[in-house]
Image (tube, rainbow, N blue to C red; front, side):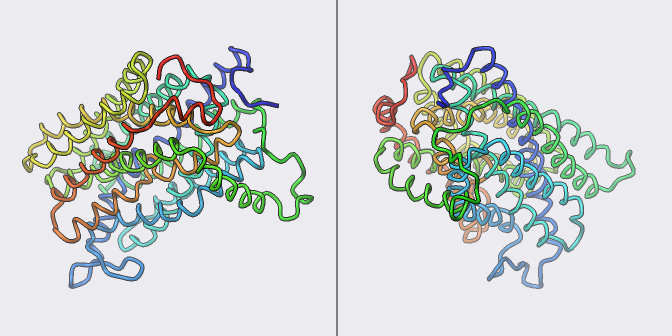
Length: 455
C-alpha cells in the first residue's frame, strides 16, 4: 500500500492535517516555556548558587562558568541525538509503528519535564539530567512527527500545511506562556516565591505536552504503514525491529550519497538552523545576564515573538506559494543576520530595543523553519521519511549543537555575551550561501517525487 498522500480522499487528508497540527501545539510548551524562557536562567542561577570559590561548577570532566552550563547541556543532549535519532528514524520506518512511537517519546519527554518541578537549591545536576532526557525525547518524537508530512499533504500543499503547523505551535506556546507570565509576575499574590512560580511553570509545560499529544495520536490512526515497513511479527525477524533498524540505517547512509543536492541542503540547514536555535535557546540568558533586564522582560519578549511568529509563519507560507520556499528562506536569513548585529549594540537596562528585535525575530522565525521542513520533505524518498528526517532533526528547533557550542566557547574565552551572540552571524552567511547553491528541481527529480507548481 502506498503512502502517497494524493491517493487519500481530500476530506480524510484535511482531517489528518488538522490532527497533525496539534503536535506542534503540544510540544511548543517545551520549546517555549522550558528551553527558551525559564530553564536556562533558572539552571544558570542554581549553578551560580552552587559555584565554588573559583566561581565555577563541575560539568562532566571539567569545571566551567555557570553561564556556560546551560548551553553546554543543550550541546551535550544533541551529541546524544546524533547517535540516537538516525536509528530512531530507521526503526520508525521499518516497524511501521510511527504513531505508537510518537506517543511513547512524547510521554518520556513530558514526564521528564514535569519532574523539573522538584528542582530546588543544589539540584542543578538533576536539572541538567532532566533537560538532556526531555530534549532527547523531544527530538525523537519530532523525527516521527515530521515523517507524517509527506503522507498527509501533496507536493503543492506542504508549504501551507507545514506553515499552519508551525503557526499553531507558536499560538499554543503563547497561550501557555501568558498563563505562566501571569503566575510568575503575580507569584506574591498566589503565595509563591519566584522560584516556586518557575518550577510550576516547568510542570505546566510537561502537562500541556502530554495532554495535547492525544489529539494527533488518535487522529492519525487511519494512516497506512510505510511501504518499506516489515509486516512480520518481531519474534520471527531474528533480532527484531532494533536490529532491522540498524540495518536500515546502514542502507540509508549508503543511499543518501546518491542525492548530493539533498545532502547540500542538509549542510546548509545544519548551519543556518543552528544559528536560529541558538538565538531561541539563549535569548533569555542574553536578555537577563548581558542586558541586565529581569525575567519578566524576557518572558514578555518571548511572548511577543510567539504572537508575531503565528502571523509570520502564515505570511511567509503565502509568500512561498508565489515565490517558492527556497527564495523566501534566503531572504529570511538576511533578516536573521541583521537582527544579531543590532542585538550586539543594544544598550543595557533598556527594554525598548529588545521588543523591536522581538518583532523582527517573530516575523521570520516560524516561516523560515516551517518552509525548511516542507522544502526538505520534497527532497527525500517516499516511505523513508523518518530515516531522512532523523538527519534533519539533529539540527531542528531546540537541538542546536554547533551554535550553542560556539556560543559557549566564545563566552568561555571572551567572558562577553555580546561577542558570543554576534559570532553567530557566520552561521547565517555560510548557511545561506550553501542553500543558494541547492538545485531544488534537480533534487526533487532525483528522489522520484512530483515537483510542486512553484519552486
